[in-house]
Every structure is written in C-alpha cells, then in structure tokens.
Length: 416
Ligand code: ADP
Ligand code: ASP
Ligand code: MG
Image (cartoon, rainbow, N blue to C red; front, side, top):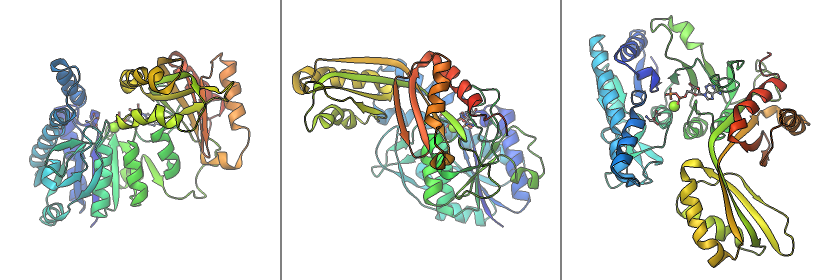
C-alpha cells in the first residue's frame, strides 16, 4: 500500500461532470489499495474571475486581500470533490491549507511553502479516507491566508508528496504529458515519455506553464517521483496502463532516453523590456537601477549592459509584463535625478523564446542554428542570454509563435 498524490488542474475540475470523473479515478486508485491525497485547483476560469472582481473594486488591490479572495476557488473545488467522492462510496474529507497546516512565508500572491504538518493527513489516511487538500494556498505565521502564485497548485501537490514521502505525485492536466513545446502553439509538438529534472526546471522557468517552477524545485530537492498525465482519459482506464502513461520526470539521464541535443522549446509570451539610456559607467550603477525594482518584489530576468562609450552605457533588462508599468514608473522617477542617465525607454510587448536541452553541453553550433533559423524567418532578435543547457532570445511579441514553430522544425523536434 503506497501513498499517492493526485493533483488536478482547473480544466480537470472544470465542471460537475469532470469533478465526478476525478472522483471515479481517485476511487479506482483507492480500491486498488492505495492511500490517496488529492490536491485540486479551482474550477477553470475561477481564479481569473475572482482576481478580476477584486480589480473591479480596486485598481491596485491590497495583496493580503487578493489572497483572501483568490484562495476561495480551491476551497470550493475541494469541498465539491469530497462530496463527489462520497457519492462514489469513498470516505473523504477536505481541508483548506490553514487547516492542514500548510505553512508559508508572508509574501502575499507569491508565498513560499515553509513546511507542512502531516499528522492530520496521516491519521485520516490510516482511517481509510481520501484526503482532499486545497491547492495554491497556505497560511503565514500571523494566520493570514496566502497564495503561492499562478499555477501554484502544482507546488502544493509536490510539497505534500515530499512531506508524506509519497511513492509518486501524479499531476493530472488537460494534456497527456510534457511535450517538446506547447502543443497549443505548435501542432507538431511531440509528447516526451521522460524528461530530466534539469530540463523540466529550465522549461518551467522559461515559461512552460505545464508545471509551476517551484513544484519542479520541490521535486528536485526532495526527489519526488513526479509524472504529468491526462485527466481527460476514461477514469476507469486500467491502473497499470495509467501508471505508465504521460511524462515521467527523471533525476538521471538513462540509456532509454532520447539522445537529443534539444529536448524542448519554451516561451514566455508576456514579457516587457526596459532600457536605461546613457548611464554613467561606474561601480554600483546596476545596483542603483535594479535595487528599487527588487525592493518592489519584481522579478528581473534578462539583463544586458553594453560596452561603455565615453564613460556612458545603456542598460537593458526584462520584467514580467504585469509588473512593467510599476517598474517603469519606479525608474522614471530616479533615472535623471539619482542615476544621472539620459532617459528610459520601454517596450511592453516582447516575448522570450528558449531552446532547452542537456545535450547542448556536448554539442556546439546550437546557438548559430537558432540564430540562422530566426534570421531566415526575418525575426529580429532583441536580446540573447545563454546558460549551459539553454539559449533564450527576446523577440517582438508578434513573432513569438512563428519563432517557436520554426525552431521546432529546424531542430527536428517533430521527428523522433
Ligand atoms: P492545469 O490547469 O492542469 O494546471 P495548465 O494550463 O496550468 O493546466 O498547464 C497545462 C497547459 O500547459 C497545457 O494545456 C499546455 O497548453 C501548456 N503547455 C505549455 N508548454 C507545454 C509543454 N511543453 N508540454 C505540455 N503542455 C504545455
Ligand atoms: N487556481 C490557481 C491558478 O489559476 C492555481 C492553479 O491552478 O494551480 O493559478
Ligand atoms: Mg497549472
């Protein structure tokens, strides 16, 4: 008898019928003798609806209140799922994060899980119950409800799996695994049977929203066996077949894995770019520019500082589009007064496209092939950054999908 964690995303929980199917699937696992903890997301569209309501009431809503509001979607879906399980004849109980307890820090809207108490869950499992735990939320040291950032239910599930030392964490979603790129953007995308943890980490951090990056970090840190698979198959599909389906995240490359140089293409559609023009090139300037941005809890991604000419340089960086205006306004105020720069320019409509693969370590020519492909499509590269296993470019948003498809083809990702 093993402890198994199931996580169901918004689409998978999107209607009464889908919730009933989730209950059927969970019941099947329990009848096969497993102890199951289920972590559902809010029903599809619900989190957006709640956040939109908040913004209708207040243009810059207080983050604590936003979490108070946004967390309710998961509370509803958890309760509904417990009821659906009852209808399946399964003893089930649902808990909100604060009832478990899932402890987080106080970074509202992007809180980090600090620890999970497992006594209550274990006691219920030992009584033969299915335990349903809200995804996406926790409670801070002051008793405030927090949320873990968009897509955060993945992280809740993997963290619960780590806390319970579960045998496996199954992330059920609306695609049947991790693909070479988002199958909604490139119809030739191919499902991978396995992907290394390192590659998954890069894919997630570079924008593939199939898994939230923090869930992959947790999986790596606690060696949680994690599989991404479809919730849209027949819920009564044979367990043996289901257990082998989808994409397994592996911790080591093994001989059965494809010997590909590039294993996937990730993209982040909603990026923005800010350039500070003609900054005096002296120690401390990067800190002066980026310090206030970091203090405002805005993630800076790519950073480029040009060679200085006559003691002046241009400094460019990217931020998530949602934080663009805030970052721009913060800098606009300080650019001339404190930093001594000439001006600040912004482009809120850029996207990032990245090729990822551990095979890049032992192969040369990936960058030149990427740049050639983009040039053949007439796509201008605005920024470039590389690491050992990825190359990213920033391009105009309108060329993003074209870039993804062209790269998918030129790296022959459709062909194995
Ligand atoms: P859930 O609600 O189940 O958490 P998400 O919408 O968060 O689902 O994530 C699943 C979606 O991720 C898919 O529908 C797909 O469009 C997108 N996606 C992006 N990149 C990939 C990829 N490489 N492989 C599979 N799906 C991807
Ligand atoms: N419901 C949350 C969101 O929409 C969390 C999740 O789906 O993982 O972001
Ligand atoms: Mg998700």
